[in-house]
Length: 278
Image (cartoon, rainbow, N blue to C red; front, side, top):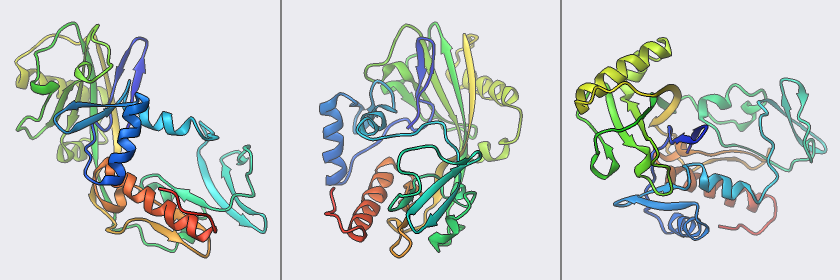
């Protein structure tokens, strides 16, 4: 759930929307709506407001969060868990005394962290598809049904007018294009400018709109879409107090990420002797 901001324009260049099926997630989404950080876009599709990062920012505001730290290792001592970055032990409150550690990142990235092998779980079955995203700004753009289009195309899988989402700016037409998984996989290592030009050319063919964009930014998502999930709600090592969660546990939906995180929270709270909270 990402939002790219540049001056006075923004693009939801990652997940485009989410749906709600289960009662627990519905309760949470209703809380988001009450706080003004989520609204319906079309049909049963919801989005974060004023960007897709809205819900995460709201939830994070109640917690102590450290930004801009790349964790390379975890270590357990008598006092508890500690986190390490490339520059050594992370400089943050409580480091070295953490009761538990949770990995909430794509499964392949967990293996890059020293100490993660203590999870004692094989994550290699999990498979992701990549995605090239192209962010474009025009003075005008053809109207899309309900603000989006899923063309029957081998290159482009999704086109969205970002400004049709609630509480977005309409000063310009901010368009997000996602390439298909197969095409993204084939072109993943190509130069971004070359990829952007190819996607734009196909977009112009599909929409029959040949205007030159004011802004063109490409972004490469390596772990965009869960193709083969782990098929279990979460991972929790009761003895070591280590866990992992994410959409990759259950399937390619934002609600799947929530369900996985909630299951892990319950398991961790039970181990730590605290009352589990939904």
